[in-house]
Amino acid sequence: LLSYPSEPESSRTFYSGQQGIQTALIILAVICIPWMLLGKPIYRIIMNKRRANVEMSEVWVEQGIHTIEYFLGCISHTASYLRLWALSLAHAQLSEVLWQMVLHIGLSMNGYIGCIASFLVFMPWSCLTVFILLLMEGLSAFLHALRLHWVEFQSKFYKGEGYPFIPFSFRLLLDEVPIEG
Image (cartoon, rainbow, N blue to C red; front, top):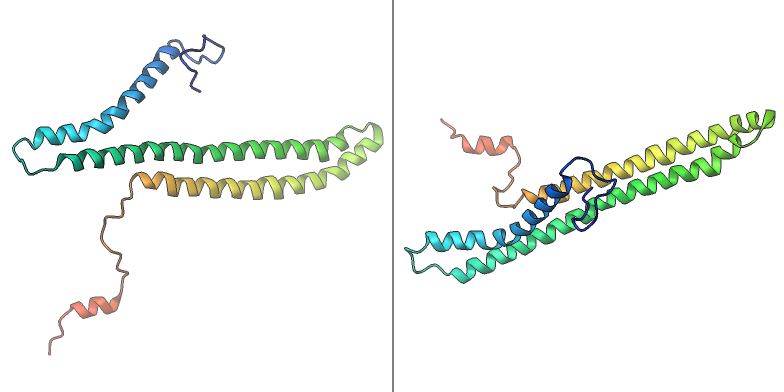
């Protein structure tokens, strides 16, 4: 829903002042790139003036790698979420095909024959709609959304720097308790 600042005012305007707000958001997004790249190293330079043994080239390289990785991840995640959009387009096209190829045939006939044809065509159309569109497409969309939320969304928070997983075990608990006697 973002129209480019170079485009003239069009019918896609949802509120007054939309063009100015969109331009400000684009400028803010562009400003964030050097801010992310330079913020941490400059902060470390200011805080580490007292210490001469800190290797600042490592800080610059590390921050550059993290910035590039973050923006590539943003592009990758956006492309992955576009897959859900493409899936919805395929779903809409499949609905149109079922309508045109099955139900429309029965509805386009006139008279008693049209009534009987509509009655006979409705059963295959409803079965195809339920099995193909609702079950298969719904399961596919659910699995895509679940994968996207698990992989892309969780990659923002999970670093893998925690404690090793130790499953619950009564034997481990009993081994920790000293036996008296």
